[in-house]
Image 1 (cartoon, rainbow, N blue to C red):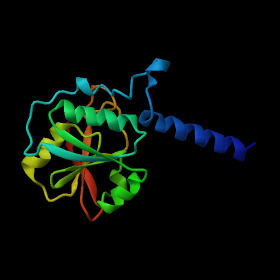
Image 2 (tube, rainbow, N blue to C red):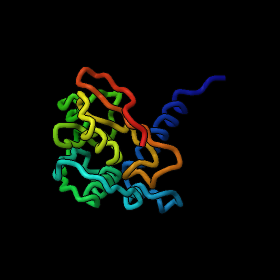
Image 3 (cartoon, rainbow, N blue to C red):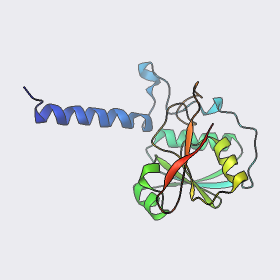
Image 4 (tube, rainbow, N blue to C red):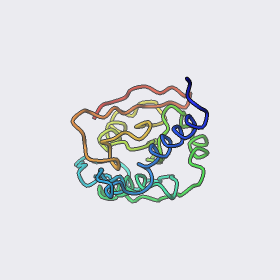
Length: 172
């Protein structure tokens, strides 16, 4: 006896909605961690970067994207928010490889920062000045800024090139 098409489709839809739940709203009501506040106040950073203003592109309905904006502003950055109904189009226009995609894209000086990347990784990017387009926390990793407090394990941050290459860059 196989799985019916109806069951397969309804299960797939439920998983997709559950996966997007981190981007929309607050899960504290059901006893989970908040994804709207994201624990960004628990992410400390005492470093410095040679820029003060960044541009973040994201869907207007994404709560975790707003939490990342809070994380940046809490650490002294002036954030221009550009809301878009086509974040994938922005990523393509800026040459972010699909393997690096997350829910928001930030123009951070001459580099791009894709997703919930801790500022320590951005600081390392600026200090080392590698020949890359930017860094990313692909997907929406738990225990990253805007997605909850720091976890017990280091967070892996990838670098990406305009050629489409994506590779491990640093753990923070």
